Image 1 (tube, rainbow over the protein chains, first blue to last red):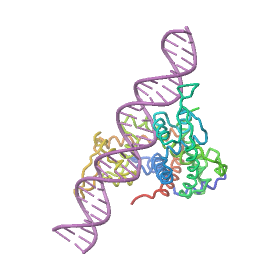
Image 2: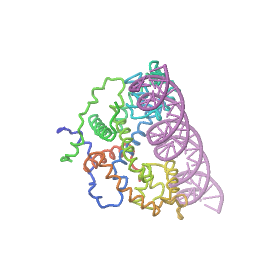
Image 3: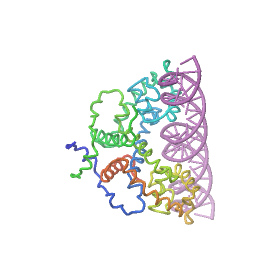
Image 4: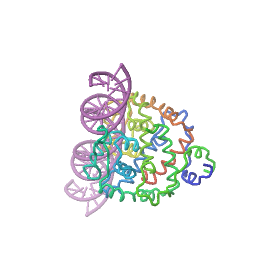
Length: 167
Length: 167
DNA sequence: GACTTATAAATCGTAGACGATTTAATCGTG
DNA sequence: CACGATTAAATCGTCTACGATTTATAAGTC
């Protein structure tokens, strides 16, 4: 990764050195990585909302339908591994999506513990329309595709370091 | 920003080019920046939780007490500008923190519309104990301080591009 | 000074997220 | 085969987050 111009361009803001705070009492949120992540995730959510609202999708629903569009017929656990969520979050979300007519939830006949998720025609249709959204979002960020991919990979590496993915 | 070794070190993972997907139907979440942000923010939240739980703090409460520790006597709006939250989220959160005895909420006598927030002794004490937490978190990430600061600044810049800060 | 407008918090309803627990089905081992 | 352990979803309670609305105060205007 020696040659990575987009990395340099991403890094427009001069760093405040954390060393400054070695003797400070309490770090203000604006200096914390965790707050930057938290607030940026919310800002991205807010940027997606107006793009998704016309489709009737919430942001987590959009992630779920995208995952199912890429791989249909997953179980709740498999979707959870993909989205890093568990059944306590997914079950109500999936029930709402089922009620909207975008997917079906049915017990696997070979293992009745598992629930398989399949997009309906309406769901596939919606997923296709939603596939336009990332491009519209990318425009809002003003970032190059390469910068977006770089940042995505940095974040995913941090996430997997903190919380290794399930099999 | 020509010389920035930590940037290079951050970027350990080879980028999948988004160009690959120019003709793909739907991007899977794992390839989306928005999902990387979403899931990494949750992973960071989860990494903080065991550090904060012994203190009796939730993650947003920790951000609030840190902000008040850095600048006491803020109004709800001022805290909201700092944390990028509004009264509909903050009021219940602050009431819980008041009930815990960490802060007081009192109407400003010169402008009765505003509510001023002041840490109690218990609140200041807690904030001081909580100030150890970022270092413990930094260890979990395995990142250098300079890398953390770089990533923080990249994210803050993206956030402010999407959602300019209030005055 | 009365009246409109603007602003600050609070309230309400809905959706996520998650710890802890529960229920139901399957697996493993004796 | 039986029975305890494991696994997959679902359920429950609490805390966030936020759009939309409401309430109370202050500011601006005639």
